[in-house]
Figure 1 (tube, rainbow, N blue to C red):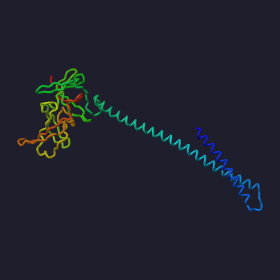
Figure 2 (figure 1 turned 180 degrees about the vertical axis):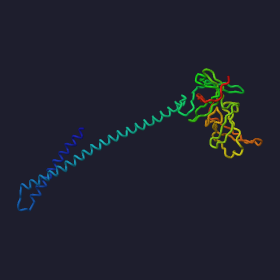
Figure 3 (figure 1 turned 45 degrees about the horizontal axis):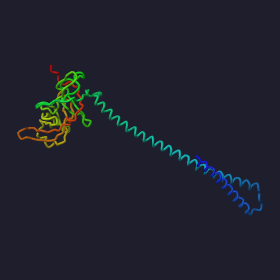
Figure 4 (figure 1 turned 45 degrees about the vertical axis):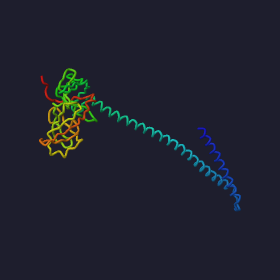
Length: 288
């Protein structure tokens, strides 16, 4: 503020100096005139007019310069404020997207039901039991949440619903799930891209053992490739369609068989599985 006041004072001094120079030059011009008649009144008016023009021009120039500097300062301040606001809006947008993703995940974990979707009952895995012929998974929800025998069970992997198995036993507050790797479980399935249909079953050895898919014609061998995705076909009352099962990891065609045998790698990692969702579909009635 002190610097600006000093600057204004110097401007005034310069303006006075400029006016004096104009007066001196004007007097010299009149004194050197060859006119025979000299009219002091007219000369004074001309001199006054010239001085006024000079003062007006000089004052206008410096006033405009000062105003321009002030406007530039104001514009710079407004630009900085707008830049700060834009950064804040970008930060808010980023936080909104993160909150939206978290909200979607929480909805899924809580079994949130949207219009047209199948209701999902969230459950936590308590443990499992294994013998030579059967492996199972125990969850912490049962009849208290409306779970019934033969309801399908899924988990989410990379945002996709993936098949875990189906409910085989239900008590008041817990249920037993038979995983899709079990040898006795047959799942109607199809290749997602080619739409060839068959049956998927487990090997029954370990929960991380590969699956097999049968009853696909040998003529389709050249169309199928490793990495193709297999999903449920929905051709029964237990498993809804388009639930992810696994990817093709091997193709074999025995001479004495009329169909191919596809080896599948399950999408679900059973060793890391903690949370599952039971789908409330009609399924088969309970056996009493």
